[in-house]
Length: 80
Image 1 (cartoon, rainbow, N blue to C red):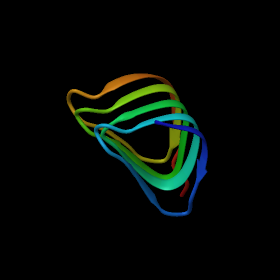
Image 2 (cartoon, helix red, strand yellow; image 1 turned 90 degrees about the vertical axis):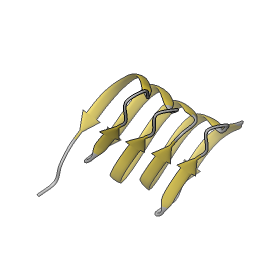
Image 3 (cartoon, one colour; image 1 turned 30 degrees about the horizontal axis):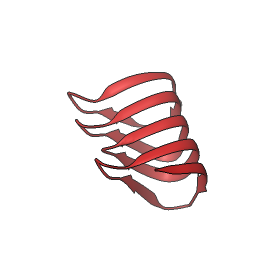
């Protein structure tokens, strides 16, 4: 488990056994594990079937696969 802040201009992959508590700011997030807190992606968030997100998501593109669990405030904003 990771607790704290993650900031990167790249892709973050959270494996099925991974857990993050805190704030995540990345370009893209591919989540198969658990994220609790804020998940902010400038390009895309993909929640795979084993993902659980609790908290807040902000992204221009959200892909939630069947089976993913989502208990979050979601803001999807597209810039032209």
